[in-house]
Amino acid sequence: MSTLNVSNITDGTDTVGTSYVLNGSAKQWCRWSMSGTAAINDSFNTSSLTDVSTGVGQLAYTSNMSDGNYHIATAVGELAGGGNRGIGIRGYQKPPSVDGCAYMIFNTGWTYSDDDLCSSAIHGDLA
Amino acid sequence: MSHLWERLLEAKSRLEPVQSKYRVLFEDPATPDEPAKVLVPDPNWMAAALEGDILPPIDTYQRDRLVPDGEPKEHPYAEPIGAMTEEEAIEYLVMKDIDPAVWRDYKGNRTIMKIVPVEMIPSDRSFRNAWRIAQ
Image (cartoon, rainbow over all chains, first blue to last red; front, side, top):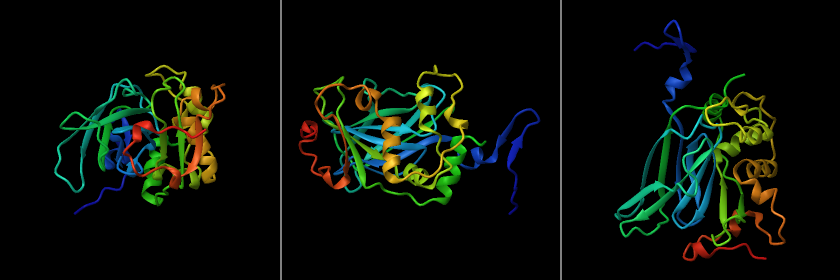
């Protein structure tokens, strides 16, 4: 196996640091729990989680996005259970913005739910 | 000067996460019927704050709030600040992630924000939507 050791990649016109490529295109991600005392398990480019209310969490970014038109991928569930869960964006709390976004978690009865496996990642342009 | 995002990448590869012993409990005066909120510092962010030379000055974020979306922002390329204590880092986070209406502009006599040890936050969430700050 060969290894390229370069700090930048260029097509002759544009140059990009290899750290952008090596670390993937997600600009921010977070895995958190709303069960018990809310906590962040691991993350990147996240400065805080705000436990807003039952089933509602709001993430803030350290390095802001250029605008709110970015892609969000989410997942939610239980670490030791089989109940179906859903997660969505709580736009009236905090829509996708340059500095963060609010999420709501609910069960199959459409009731807000505090689950221990919540995750999100965003893709888009940094400020 | 490298971009803040690149500095965060480098920091995550090098620093152990730090789970803060503090939480920030606050109420939003604009929505008095909502329960108290709890701000949880991110452990990787806290590690960067304690390490120093990674995060930008807090005033760059405050000025960037006034910059329209899509326009260049100041904080990504601002000269990083030095190491903070955990208490200083919490104050920085309050100013960064909580609306100024809570920590700067509120003139009422009700206590709407407290920095508390994590042990003071209930782990029983049965009545989560009734949480208020004790006066």
